[in-house]
Length: 170
Image 1 (cartoon, rainbow, N blue to C red):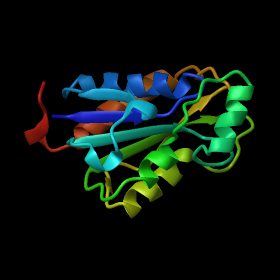
Image 2: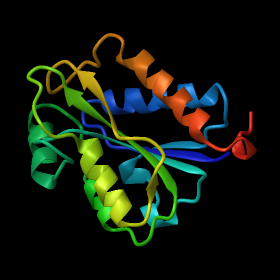
Image 3: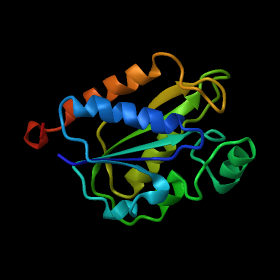
């Protein structure tokens, strides 16, 4: 089983959730690669049994160059490329995918990066293995709220359970 997780993270919170999802998957299947979006191959060249994409929610959706610049001004370390651009540059992505985001809990603002990413991925031919999931952080910089890492680990295990038995490799 080859699972590829690609994430975007300015403060490290989305990376923490990506690692927890991988831990949940690893209980049942082999997890291939966890990559920051800036070092990921083009989306349409990813070869995997499952692609998992994670992004922080910026301004009600996926980050844009302006929101990444604002995060950098506030002390974050966003990359030059976001999930929006990574998916947007792709051709056909005929893979099963799962999508998550990190989202500020209070104030509970509308919009979610995972829903925008799922829509983009579907427009490129991907099929969703599960509905998009949000994991919560306290404030724009975080940290990840208590219980969310455990919830992400459980979500990873649930994703593994949705995959055909024939591709489980552990």
